[in-house]
Length: 162
Image (cartoon, rainbow, N blue to C red; front, side, top):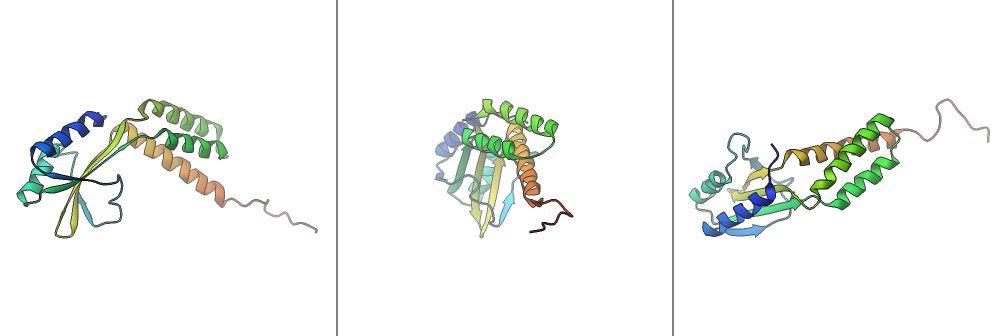
């Protein structure tokens, strides 16, 4: 689902303010590696229900993080792609996908809300479909680069007489 997270980000912050909850602005992706439980945003997409759960537990502070797509991230992927030796049609497909994503530079691509309860983080996270496409392209390029690095620099069966 392609969401307008810029509008939703403002709406969430307004809601938190009106609900009297303290907001701790955290870094996007800063929760990775911590024990967490993810909210089912597919079946329960309403962030207000998530925040009501925190309020019912007596919590008054939530973590909030948002990320915008950075043009430098796209530029870095293009540079990595240019350096790869992969089939021409695969390279062309990835170039097109990355070029199409340029329209989203500066647009919010991820929102995270979280609260801590009994040493576990409960997390609500949303990303639009176009950002999933970015992450998939990034993964394909990184995987291809890793495979490219694994190939030996010399030809098998060739021995130098020096």
